[in-house]
Every structure is written in structure tokens, then in C-alpha cells.
Amino acid sequence: MALLEIKDLHKSFDNLQVLDGIDLTVNKGDVISIIGSSGSGKSTFIRCLNLLETPTNGEILYNGESILGKSFNVNSYRTRVGMVFQSFNLFNNMDVLHNCMLGQTTVLKRSKEEAEKLSMEYLNKVGMGMFAHAKVTSLSGGQKQRVAIARALCMSPQILLFDEPTSALDPEMVGEVLNVISELSKEKMTMIIVTHEMQFAYDVSSKVIFLDKGKILEEGTPKEVFDETKNQRTKDFLKRFKH
Amino acid sequence: MFLTFADIPSKLPDGFFPQVGFFLQYYWLEFLKGMGVTLLISLVGTICGFILGVGLALLRKLEKNPNDNKFVKVVKKIASGFSYGYIELFRGTPMMVQALVIFYGAAYMFGTVMSTLIAGFLIVSLNTAAYMAEIIRSGLNSIDQGQIEGGRSLGLSYRQTMFKIVLPQAIKNVIPAIANELVVNIKDTSVLSVIMVTDLFYNGKLIVARWYAQFPVYFIVSIIYLIMTISLTRVLRLIEKKMNIKTKISLPLSVTDPSGFATNELIDGKDYAEPKERRL
Image 1: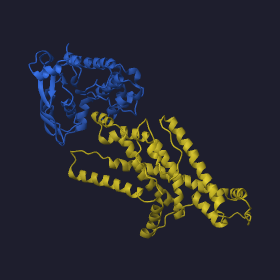
Image 2 (image 1 turned 120 degrees about the vertical axis):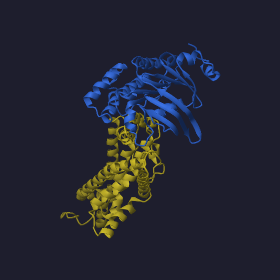
Image 3 (image 1 turned 135 degrees about the horizontal axis):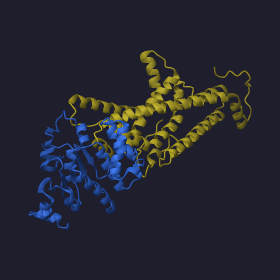
Image 4 (image 1 turned 30 degrees about the vertical axis):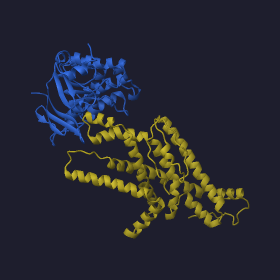
């Protein structure tokens, strides 16, 4: 069974139609990149998957169960669908370690020792172990984003959502974050990534989606979308990208 | 009770400074007691007001969940309406009038005369709560929405996100304004003399009534207020420095200061404090 099944998803803000009927199936181990110009609805789409935005219409099924039902436990769902934000959103009132531990101890009810052990494991994995007791505000953007990824991983999620994880970073820091993500893709982590890093999308994705004006314009393997597209809009968008 | 020193001379010395010396010599204990009451009421009132204020501010910011049923929606509306009304009521009336209404109101309605000290605690707490609520609310508004989303994305409930992530940061941001509230209370408790709370100002009034020497006595009273506010401001500034809050607390200004200095507090270059009405 598909992990996530999105059917005819619509989202509008007041009169502005942002998502106009999106269908997508996410299977275990998929790495799906969502590309498209600004304002095409990429971020709104990925935020709908985490219910940070409530869809106006349509259906999202998680393991066959609708996540839009009134009795659906959203908080427990969110522990299994992690999110990494463009602006990191690390908790400024805690150090790096406690950023990673908070969700584990309060939501998953793990013991402090267990949470700390797992946090350190993931912090080391993203190369931030030695910053465990550093203040969040003292980190660079790339370091913050790596901590944010570790924090999401600590919840042992089944899916990770990335909302433009490198857009707020300077070029030198982009690499360190992308390395972490591509490492995860090798471990068969299921991921959905909104990104403007075309080369990266080409390299790690199992599927690329080109979103335009709230609709999926093109969908396929990286090769199909980047190299073999017949669609003029897609060609225009990818014009400046040469790999 | 008051004025029981057997050896107080029956005649006041001539000249301003001899008179000041006279009152300090024979009435220092009354001044000290009054100072104690003033400090006690201000401190208790500010702490209780802070706790109530946090509650009021959180009531104003209850989660808007589209999945709530009608009953929960109505309850949330009432709670936030109550908070709004409370803040308007207590910021829109002078504390002196509040003191009279609460003290004599309780006597009128329930036939119980409160101890004036308890009444003082109650009035200052209720009054401060309204101002604190606005301070905390501006602190909450200063926190980036991303902090809430970060918490919610991990599966934390709205309440957990508020208490573990947003509120601690919000309070830290507005500590200067909270500290300022304590300094304001030291001065404003003087209005409690209308219900005979024996604070510094009231004790001064009693001495004036006995000797009819307004200027020397009120001069001493004002100097003591000044010592309290200035030393407290220094202490609070030191604490803020220790807590690494990048701002300067302003010296206590007059309650009639038209500039509304709370609006000028800059924290990390952002203007968090909302325009603040002065009481009295």
C-alpha cells in the first residue's frame, strides 16, 4: 500500500487558488523532488501534507487512512511525517541537544536518557555532535539546517518533508546540507523535497514533479523531466539549468 | 499604635533642615514600616499580577482549530472576550478608583471588611494583571510564527508549543517591561492610602496630620521613594545583564510623562512593547 496518497488536492487562500487539483502517490523509499517557479504552490503543497495548512478540498490518505478526518490524531501523525523548514525554526530558547530531545520526551514519551542517546546519534550523523550544547543562535545557517534535520530524524519519521531546505543559505553552506539529504536518500528514507537546486533534484530523486500554477505539469523520473520533456513551459523553466 | 513615643518633644524646631532631622530622628521607624508595606505590596502585586497576566494573555491567544466543535468554539470566544474586557476595564479606570470600588464594594456586598493589606495585595495584583497581560501579549506577538510551526511539526500540541517554546521566549523578550512594572507599582501603591493601607505615603500623611509640616515630611517621603526606585532599577538592570538581555531599562519616569517610555524600549533592535497608557 502507498504510504501517502494525495487525491485532487485543492487549497485556496480567500479568493486565491494556490493548489488546483494535485494527485500524487508516495511509496516507501521514494525521493520526490518538487520544482517550479515561485508562487506555483510548492510550499503550500508540502505544508498541506503536514497539515500546517488545511486543504480546502481533496483527500490525503496516510496508510489508507484519511488525515483530514475530524477524529484523526494530527499530533501523532506529525511525529511520523517530519518537516524541515526553509527558515530552520529551531527553538531559540534551547540548546542544540534539547532541540532534538523536546519532541522525543514530550510527544513520544521517551526517557531522557534514551532521547539524549538518540539525539547524539543523529547529531553526529549530520556532523553536529560537537555542537550539542551550543546555543542555537550561535550557529551558521548550514549548521542550523543540519540540526533541524537531526531534530526531525529523532522522531523516527516514516517520511521527511523538506520545504526549500537550502534557500536561506549562502552557496558555501548549501553543499553541507545537500550532502546530508543525499546521504539519507541512500538509506532509502522516504522524502519529499521542494527545491530550487536542480542538479541536486536530478541526482537524488526517484521522481521529479514540475508544479505550475497549482497543477502538476510534468511528472516522471529526473531524466524524463529534465532531459526528455516535450512541454514548452517545462523547457522554459529549465532553460537556465544545464547539467 | 502610631505616635506613641513618650519622649517626642512637643515643639517643632525652626528651619527646614532641622525639621527634616527632627522627623527622621523621631519617626524613622514609621517611615521604615511604611517602606516595608510599600515594597511588600508592590512585590506581591507584581508577582501575582504577572501570573494572572500570563493567563489573560494566553486566553487572548487560544488556538483557532477548524476541527473544534461548536461548544469549544463558544467557550474559546467567551474566554478571549473575558480577557479583552478585563484588560479594558482595569486599564480604563484609575487604580485609586478601583481600590475604592473593590474595598467598599466587598464591604457593601458581602458585609466583610477586608484587612487593608489583603485589599492592597488584591487591588495591585488585579490592576497589574491587566498591564502585564498586554506586555506578555506583545511578547507573544514578537515571537516568529516559525517557532510555533517548528513545535507543531514535531507533533507538540498547541498548548505544549506555547508553554515550552513560545512563552519562555516571549517572557524573556519583555523582561525589561515586566521589571518596569514593578518600579511603577512602588510609586502607584501610594494611591492605596485612600483605603488606609499603611504604606509609606499614608504614614507620611499621618505625621503631617500630627505636626502640620507638609513640606519636610513629604520631602522625606519623596526621597525614600526615589531611593527605592533607583536602587531597584539598578538591581533589575544588573539581573538583566546577567541574563544577557540586550536592552537598557530606563530610569523610572513620572507617571505623567507624556513620552510613554515603554514604547521606546528597543529589544534586539525590534520594538516589542506596545504603546502603554500610564495609570493614575
